Image 1 (cartoon, rainbow, N blue to C red):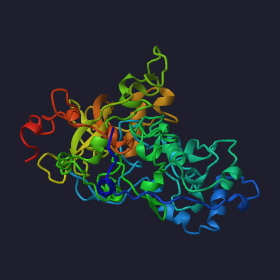
Image 2: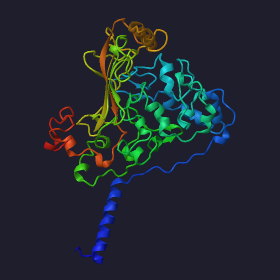
Image 3: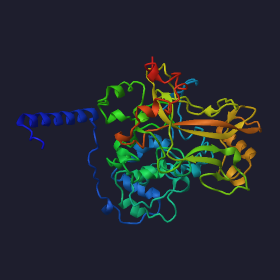
Image 4: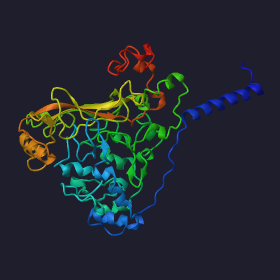
Length: 465
């Protein structure tokens, strides 16, 4: 029979529990979001709206500066601030408005389809007025009916109840952000491997912040005057206005010294995001050269006549690379080598760069049209008269696209491989399921130590020198 604890033993046991709890708090030291509340706007709107611009005007009666603030942001301009880009002289304003990607390639000439996700109304061509306040879409970020849907040129779809949407407004929820970011690139899970609609009602295993802690996007992506913090390296080249784990996890030290020894070379995300696309498959490969084939049946995860051949994967192990929070960037008109993959947004950093860490990435690989003579990628016209989706004539679509982009076109085209890097920061697993030693080190470890510059497993050599 176990003897009862003495008074001294009980005191010591209590002290140990207290110290263990204190160590846990010290090790985590997380700043969680405050509780959220929002004014019920139901009583402020009574008459039905005849246009979405009328809704914006009604909002501005109280929120007088809101539209002017929104119009200055990347979300509205689809351009960032002037930045220096490795390999290019001077500074450049870049963004979705003028960059090439390896998904739908580019928006030039394709505005009505692409601007479905614009935070504004009516961007149908190059004449869109970015200074007109009623062109700002307040509802896409703030409405809460769940029935608000944008169509071509960012206009609400026919039949949308604008009055009900206006009455429902509140702070942005995951669904508001997700209507564009979960479905970017033309479908669910196409672009971001770590953003899809499984996060709307997430489990803790899928994303510990949204599942267990019930975070909304705006809890991390904090906003000042409608300028939403956070960096998307598909359209950015540096961490300006970025956010990071240590914004909330102020003391990142782990209690295990062996784990702490990794902090100067390994990003938090590398251990804490073991897999991505956990519940919804994500597009990993897009081959435009296969488009236009009438003999193949359409299947959203394999082939579409208008877009070509795809590969989707689920529960994907990331690929890893050194990353110092800066990237290179292929710009429209840059030369390329069709015999090797062109990286459109090359992460910068190496094993010798003390500011770089090993990061996890979704790698999206594509095959897209280029000019065989001028050796440059061309953003084709896809929608509208002369567009590939309408006429399935690559020569015509590329000629029109090159003219709109202001680059030459020889009339000879081919298809060349491209790569885009998508850094992962969502779908953070509970700490109990983070990577362990043998996941990276040892015979079956997931790291490609040779490509990372180590040559062999650094456990054998003592790490980065």
